[in-house]
Image (cartoon, rainbow, N blue to C red; front, side, top):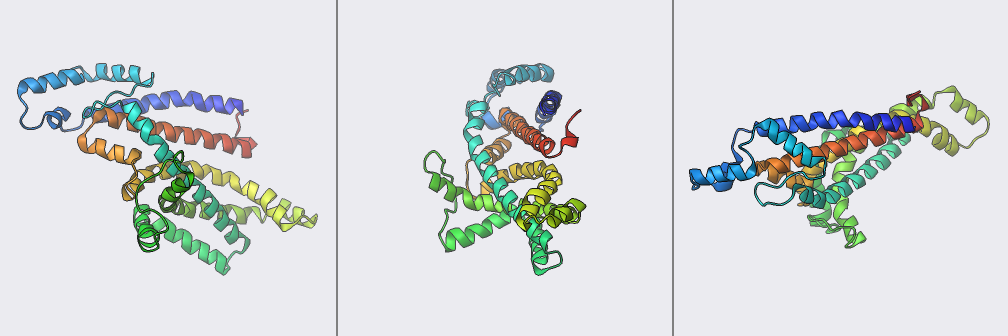
Length: 314
């Protein structure tokens, strides 16, 4: 297992380097000049040149990239062009909000997906199986932002059980944090639970037909033990393979759902940066998001290697 972790960590270095090159290259090729947005239409040529010099935009792209990379490896992602705020500080301030929303969404997706998939697999071609299949199809078809608006209309506006907008940090009030994160997490998690339910059902149906399951039942083991300890454990091996993709989808979806619920996470920061063409902020956000996706993939590989010894390097 240690060798697997070392190999995955070693593969992260070239991956992050390639991502940093692509991110810096693409943001440097933006058609409009951020200096024009900063000084406006009334700025003079002298002011224009002064701002370009202050921002370091007169340097060649290669020089600017290695200067930025040298600071990034030390944790300094630069300074915003528009409000002189440290990109690292701004990202770290918003990151817990997006991570908490993604974590609760992933928990909902896993719990609902596994429960629905197991229930459908235990009663194939029954009304439970058909209901789970229809629910999974609808869940994958409905956009999460539209589902979020529907949840707001029902549970926030009509029933007034949850707040419609805003986010309360867990350090301030755990109960209010749970209330503020429930609706956006449901909007995200139920969509991903549909894909997990399909995979769990397919894997469980195959596992339940194996000889060792029949042998376990013939030995007089309870159905609960056979299902949870033998069938579900082996069925989770292929399911874990798609969890990293689903968590990545949740991270991306969180950026959109945050707009629906007026949550000041990375999504709000990213949209503001794109509108203003705040290049350092865009570069920092992309690098951080890619780093999160890579860490999720690493965690998934470790869990997959734990469940499936054949996947471990020899």
